[in-house]
Length: 194
Image 1 (tube, rainbow, N blue to C red):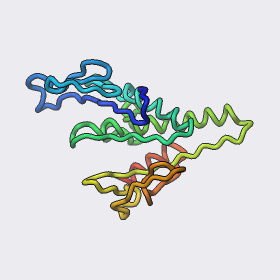
Image 2 (cartoon, rainbow, N blue to C red):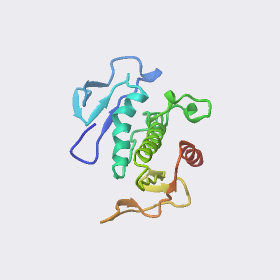
Image 3 (cartoon, helix red, strand yellow):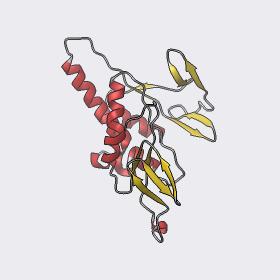
Image 4 (cartoon, rainbow, N blue to C red):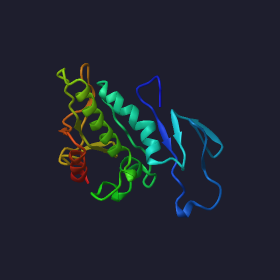
């Protein structure tokens, strides 16, 4: 996915649920970056159709994001949609995806990104072992609901404010950040926020 702006929009069209299978589809992918909804065409940076796999989404969104992080840029993935639209599945995978006996093929975007990020960090540090190359990775989890921001790592922190700083850029004031070094650290935080 490439775009001239810092924000890119991917639309993932989920397969119809059992109750929706009758009749013609309402949403149709018409090109790599356009969909049709009730005969109206909408264009985005990219469109993934109902046959797209979790790995397809990772290759489209996750791989470039990891490389941006390693280049020193802050990166975020923001899932938006109504209840039941597939946000959690796309971001995390099915409910069993983060259990100890799950296969990484079930993983959603987030665990794949972190697995790749930690792998790339190890590669870069080994490649530049003669230099003092140091990467730091920290996570925050927040929820925006009814225009209120809640810190999911510290749910007592509610109604947080978005701020902007010349050096730090845009950030959420008082949002908890925890350093993570391995995929297990990330899973520990995910379990904590659920």
